[in-house]
Image 1 (tube, helix red, strand yellow):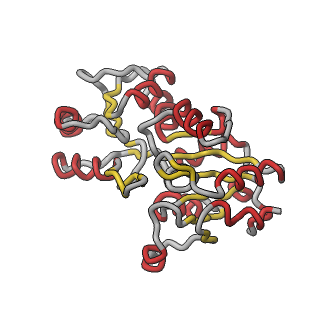
Image 2 (cartoon, helix red, strand yellow; image 1 turned 30 degrees about the vertical axis):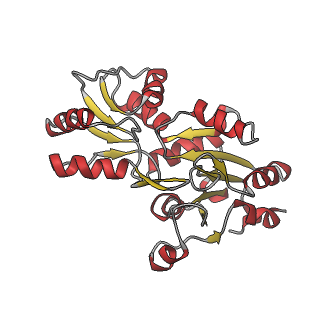
Length: 260
């Protein structure tokens, strides 16, 4: 498939559309090109430390007004899945106030003392007390779910340890890994995204800066895979990797002439 044939773009956010609090040059022009050519898009982020309302305000501050329906986080996808698969069960949620709000809005009971299952997200308020509690519950054998697998979160100054690093900590202490991971590159969030957009895999492209999440999502589920080198992946990392995207660009803006 060529870029001109794509009808819907699933767009990563951190490292793809912006980096930290700074929009990446060319990002707004890319969105305008999609709108001007009648294409649809959905922001699809693994970052569960914030909810859709937060990202909507962040994008507005960068000059882009987006309805909430065009933002899907791994946190909201996980909350919806927990509500369906563990109806009425109480969840211990390792996360900040945004992730807790996602679960409350989905109607999932939260119990940080006597839960029936454990959910871990990217918690920017993490401390040793929380890590001890989550390890105790995981070690006790409760069902164990993670919002996404990313090891690092790109920032303006480098990288912050993400949930993949938290999972490694928990595994070292308990010997267990999550039975279910929802975010990219896993099927649960892909299905949620396609349901939200109404598009098919064959007419959809996955765009992002990470090989093992964004690009793997496209390759694994039959979508066009587009890597941008504005975030985590460097040319050297791409050359050394066995994961090869269909297209590689320095940033979103480089695609604009190809969308006409």
